[in-house]
Length: 563
Image (cartoon, rainbow, N blue to C red):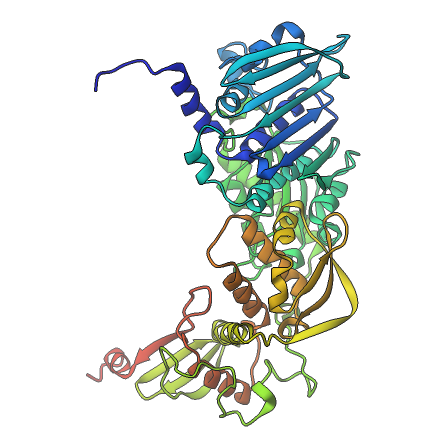
């Protein structure tokens, strides 16, 4: 094939593929333009997961009539003029690629009015070209409407996720900038429903209330700046360990208020929490790093989502120190009771998990599979190691069993059996409780709250981003069922990940299982091992982790030189 210059439309599609990954990418670019225009109010309206419609309205500076057309030319921008400007970028956008890239894959309408203009300018763009232009009345600011995203790229449409998932990504974008700019009033409408509204009063804590809810906000602590502002300067808020999460989706980083993804910053924060969080838990943090524009390179990624620091060590140290100092002022040494809470049964606090039907310990559980697919040999319990592992002897050697993973497997199969027979045990709440969720979580819950009924949850919408819970599965009634639901919604909002129902069952099993660090009696250990012997897949927990380590008699002989 001979070398040739690509057709401009092909070039535009390639550029759009780098900038516009999904509908949330469009929202991000348009919101950043509104912020750079000095807006104090930004409204985002979305329909059909952003494919049918995205509309972003602001009260910013607007665009003068003579420059409106240029805004849709590639590499046309008001934010960079020469090479020197690339060394000191203070705006959120600078490439001049966003609007042309969006135009290449969607239909765009724009109405904009600059200060002092008597009327606004209207543009209608189709297939990357201006199809119609005129005047239209509006106050100062800009409204950009994007319709039929990817309408001519069916392959790209095929790779988009469900409407709920795409709405979740969009809600996350708006939420992040609401946290980065608490002085700006943000509003988000998903399919004509209010999903987020921030007061815009400049108080970060008030934005946190709107994005993450009152429970998280009540457990946030402020990072205090140095007496003499150093470079870099770290500001924001971090959560107490009690509001830790199972994923890193609650780590928000901004560099000069630009939302970025950074492994360096995530590591700095998580190392500051070392010794304060359980394994697998991650903190909540909203952190802005301020430093001279010359000390950070924002021009290393097409979507501007990553940055490179001139002095990574200084940035890491500043973030780590700020977070660690804030935590040290608030947190005392954790007690064992705070880490591992024993199951409280009617007969007393010593029973770590409910015995099936309270019958003889050796009796098989009534919910056990009739024909296990991978059975264990009969094991004799010897004791407990580190309040986390059960030591057992089998006919072919030694077994070290992870009590949490093992009980997870047992509970998971119990839940699946009950669900298949429609026999999930339900516990009604004496008084209905409200569950507040983030905009991203709400997008998922509104699609699935009725499906949760088959697991024993009775949930119904109760206003914006609030749901009323009337009943929960009996298995997790005395556990943190609200935390379980939030973790489940967080994992689902990150994308479609396999069997949804299986994910619910696995999450319920995890939250109802005994914990690592929890002391078990001999009777409890023997009963757990008996239940595990009856499991269909006893060797792994529902998440795929091993439940046990086996040292064969031959291995032990070799290790002790007896062969």
